Amino acid sequence: MAMRSHYCGLVTEAQLGETVSLCGWVNRRRDHGGVIFVDLRDREGYVQVVCDPDRPEMFSAAEGLRNEFCIQIKGLVRTRPEGTVNENLKSGKIEVLCQELTVLNPSVTPPFQLDDDNLSETTRLTHRVLDLRRPYMQNNLMLRYRVSMEVRKFLDANGFVDIETPMLTKSTPEGARDYLVPSRVHDGHFFALPQSPQLFKQLLMVAGFDRYYQITKCFRDEDLRADRQPEFTQIDIETSFLSEEEIRAIFQEMIKTVFQNTIQVDLGDFPSMSYFDAMLRYGSDKPDLRVNLEFTEVTDVMTDVDFKVFSGAANMQGGRVVALRVPGAARENGGMPRSEIDSYTEFVKIYGAKGWPTSRSTNWPKSVRVCKARLSRISMTRHWRRCLHAPGHKTAT
Image (cartoon, rainbow, N blue to C red; front, top):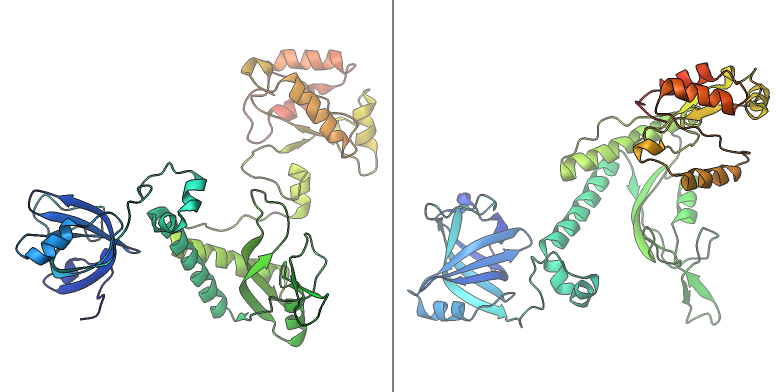
């Protein structure tokens, strides 16, 4: 028999009555007064191994087992007794009656339990091997593997060619500093590790490889931040002879396929918005659509008001006046304090605005009267009515 015939987590009712050979780590050992149960673990999951005293040599070895011992067992797959089935495990309906047990490598007492979720990063990195045995980390690495495979399958099916590019190259002017590697042969000269394969994929396009991709390492010598690290992996893709719509369609489909096949999430169709619509509605070409705050257009009702800040912009060539309604920001609702409003006033000046006129409203008739008094009899009724009926907004401003 082979050293391992099955993975622990893949032994199921299909193997009932078979003799299997399993290798893995002792996740837990339980002595139930004459019968020892071992939860054996590998990358695919767990299986319960039963050691009874009918085989004295095997049982003696089982008595010495501790957590994280690496062992090999051979045994008979049988159904678990009634009432002991574990529905949370793929192998939860069976157990393996141990016939032979070999300790491949004993272990000292682990510094922490693998199911401990309150570990500090220092502890995890100090004992990195044990950290990588934890189910959370194993699932992460397996998910990354499945994502890479799905990306490769999709791109291969769509005519993309996987081409490896050099790691030791020349420095290129990009967004960060290069990592340098001194040349032993050419004294005083250095190679640079690539920040991205930018030069090479451009060469490939001109050379006629019109659909290229590579899952590659990139290196950038920059300070650590939440979304930055010295080396990272990116899916690098370049194409020729495709329109913007074709490129968007291909890669939206790739992302949808990867999510569906790896974590069974259907993303549906991606919403799209033109640059003009984004700037018109949100004032940004990358709006966060989770924040339901849109501009309300009031240019046409501001052309004839006495307040020159509004009327001047409204009558200017290409000028525009908009209102931004923030539900729940009125002071009575525990909303936006005056200090925050003042900070926004300073913020908009960065982009050339002269100010940030604001008004609070928890009562529609009162707010109109206040605005009329404050803004020198501006005809604000139409303006406020438009703001208060803006899409997605409910109450206070």
